[in-house]
Image 1: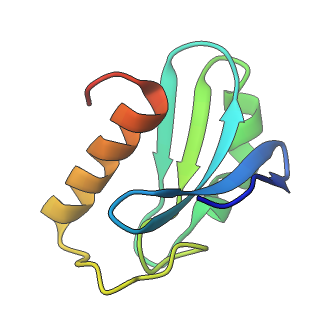
Image 2 (image 1 turned 45 degrees about the vertical axis):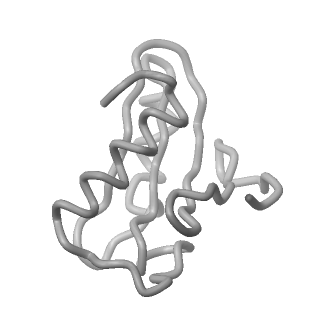
Length: 98
């Protein structure tokens, strides 16, 4: 959706996941690891650990709708809705079902 931008140790970009969804992909090798912040957080919560984790995992840090660089776009913050959003992200970015 948007052009990739530099992020400390990763690539920042926005994808279309039923609206814009910002993530930082730290790449890495090994099994995928999706980092999800808590209430009031963002991808920045993971800055100190994402790069070291990328030595053993493919690390993706996500901003849920209404947090970080992902606008709310009128989307529900219901837990089930967030789970479906993350499921779609995993299937799209990792290529495997969640």
